[in-house]
Length: 98
Picture 1 (cartoon, one colour):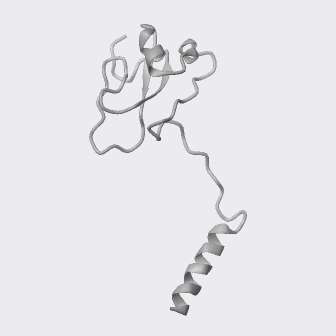
Picture 2 (cartoon, rainbow, N blue to C red):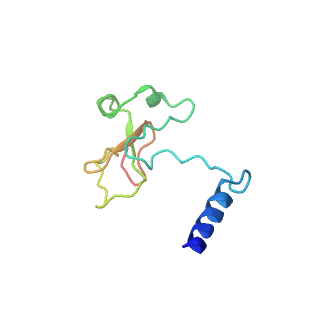
Picture 3 (spheres, rainbow, N blue to C red):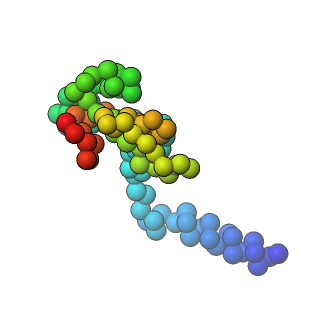
């Protein structure tokens, strides 16, 4: 039991050591509740939720990039039908007709 405690303690100390592991910011769009910031100058970035983005016919949804138990499906404008939409952009989804 002492050996296990010692190993766990050493592992925790190694992880807590400053400078050992550089903290990387999580990319936006991998959490279901994300709302990703638009690229600079993107007119559709003014929309702060799915409803406002969908209401603007010039805008497209940014697809969720996280893990899902089912394959995510999106409409032709990039809005999720069974997965979250995580942002608003003026760029159409890849492979989508304009």
